Structures are given as structure tokens and as C-alpha cells.
Length: 289
Image (cartoon, rainbow, N blue to C red; front, top):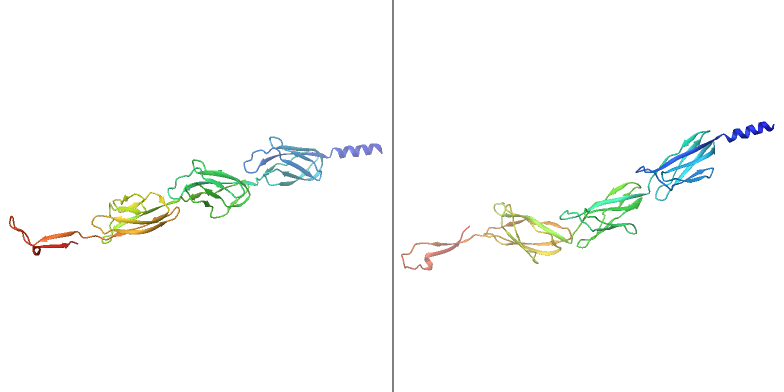
């Protein structure tokens, strides 16, 4: 009887197996160290080493639930069956709870990349754009509004909530509006419709002056926001003017048709002899055109 009992106990002692595994970042596939791995119903726990490895040994055969937990990653679990005299693998990839918002910031008028733009999320991380105009924000999963600020520009905020998923990168480029705008357009002859070259373009308050190109087109440099009276002057044409109001980042097109201005002419009805004078009745003043 005693012999049978010893044999039974010995047989039960051999009905055991092991669980081993490696935990990795589910996005990059890099091994994760410091992951807490626990077992139900045994209550055993372990932490992954620098290579992401863990192990549980001499477990009774049967089903277990293996739990994985690490800050910055979503919790995970999986069922594992321990088999007699076997090593069962319980590898796992953990999905990060953090994602990234990245983007490039440019000037809305010149389209130049802007460095030194302060980028932030209310109550969250912030960054300053690089010389290439790029920025990176590490955030938890969720929806965010991104704010942008730079001296000489109107403060900006993303026009929609940006959705971030764990372990993924979301692109959020932005055009920052300078506290300036531009005026551009084409100047044509009101009668022929052809472009007028060499038109002098000025504004009040003063912004300097420029002239129209060969085809009648023109474009100001970025000028401060505000209200302007823009004037257009050309030889043999009547002067024209337009009122313009610039808001941050505006590109306002102002096309102008100039009316030809006839030149005066003098008609002499007869040629006098040398030394003679002409009376006003013999000279006619008029306008040509």
C-alpha cells in the first residue's frame, strides 16, 4: 500500500511543464525589458530581462492565463496550456499607448519652412520646429488640437482634432500666416485688353513702389496687414486706384483696366512767312484719340 502511494505521488510530481517567452514592442519588434508577466491561477510573476525574456518552471499541467503589463503599453493576456515535460512558448507583442504627431510648418505666403515655431498641446507636450520646419509630439492615444506660435505670425491652431493611435505616427502639417499679405494682379488696356508694361504701382500708406512686367502682371513683396489705397500710373493712361484691406496671410488679386488718356495736339492752319506771327484764330488746340 505504501509503495502504491509513493508511486502515485511520484507520478504526479512528473506531470509538470514550463512556460517561456519573449515580449517585444509590437510596432518596432524591439525586445522589452521590465515587463511584468503574471500567471493565473498560480499567481506566479516574473519580469522580462534586457532581452525581453521570461520563464515559469515546474508548473502543473493545465491551462493558464498569462498577463503582460508595462507602463506606456496596452495590457495584454493570452491563454497557455502547460503540457507534461514540455516547454511552451508564450511570446507577446505589446502595443504602445503612445503615438506621435509630426509635421512641417511653412509660411503661408512664401511657402518657406519655418524654424523656431513653438508647437504645443494644451496640458501636454511641446516642441520647437527645426531648421527644416519639422516638429514631433509624443502623446497618448486620443484626439488633440495642436497650437502653433511664432513672432511675426498669427497664432495658429489645427483646423480639426488630430486622432492619434498607439504606436502610430500622424502627420499634421501647418501653414502659419504671417502678419503680412501680398497684392498681385494684371494691368490691361481697357480698350484692347493687352497687358500694360511699366505701370508705376504705389500705395498709401507707403510700401515702396514697383512696376508691372512686360505682360502687365505685378506682385508686391509681403507687406504689413492693414488698409491701403493702391495707385496705378502709366504714360498715356488715366490714373487708377483701388482700396485693399490685408488680413494675416492674405493673397489678394487686384486686376486693373487702365483707360487710355489722349495726348493734346496743336494744329497750325497755315505756315507764316519768316518773321510773321500767327493769330489765335490760325492755331487750333485739340485732343488726339
